[in-house]
Length: 149
Image (tube, rainbow, N blue to C red; front, side):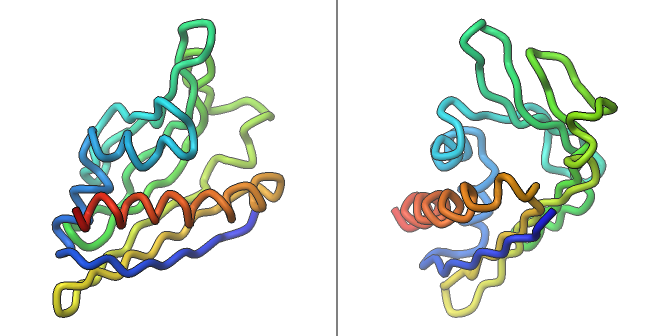
């Protein structure tokens, strides 16, 4: 497991960046770089369960299952991953996902003079590090473009 860290500066207030990250329509837009058709079910408040999903060719959905472990609006949100969703079924105990369980992803926003610094930290299994090292900067560029519109 490796922790990746990404930072971008966005010429928009923290509230705008927060909304861009977490509102349904804009979330779908910026996360489409990871998986076309991505969306979430659940909420971003502390303690809530959240599912990050996309449709499969067979009509079912697959993705990741998490819990919001911290949420301070316009400043910070952290997710702890509990398992996967495989063809619509939550998997929290199989050997295949043991490495994922307990991994984290967080977003930290800090604003100064109308510019928001967005920091993302994400734990990744070794086999996904290279792929996501390239995908995250592209996704954050889309967040920046949306928030600065």
